[in-house]
Image (cartoon, rainbow over all chains, first blue to last red; front, top):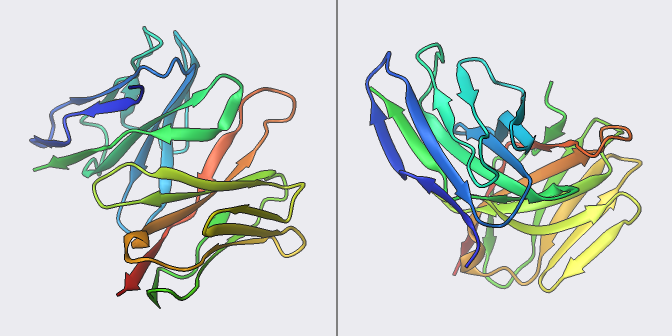
Length: 113
Length: 116
């Protein structure tokens, strides 16, 4: 049963701490993405990766970092430099060469106290 | 600079009637459009898409219309059902000119409520 998993579903952290959000996919997709959703706004692209060991900044990369050491995994670290980290974070992936149809995971709600 | 806009934050419809969700875009390089449906605290799920070479695509109760001259697309749901109540996002894609990667640009979303 293929899909994208994100864990945990809810995450709480104290201000000033770095936190890493997990994203795993078993769809054999090459490309993976991280988005952020805030109330009343659409999804905004944080980082994306077309292939293992390569990733690019999206529209709002400041305060975030990623790695892509394995095809299946694309973890996102929210650093203390991110000014407004409380948000709903969504991971997505797409099939090789078909970047326009992205499949999303269930999301992680991060709350920074 | 909001390149994809959904100007109606919410829409309320009676069960059995038609729901029409609208989306406008400004970037003429967009060549593929998608609609996603999202329930609270869940990831969006793909609903229907349309290429810029078409003006209509239909899938069951869902039809997407594209008017390129007006840079406008709409999603029609007929008949609407209470289970359709969700946030609907419009998204647009532009090929990165010969390379294999482009990116999706999302609208702000429209909350659809279908009343029994």
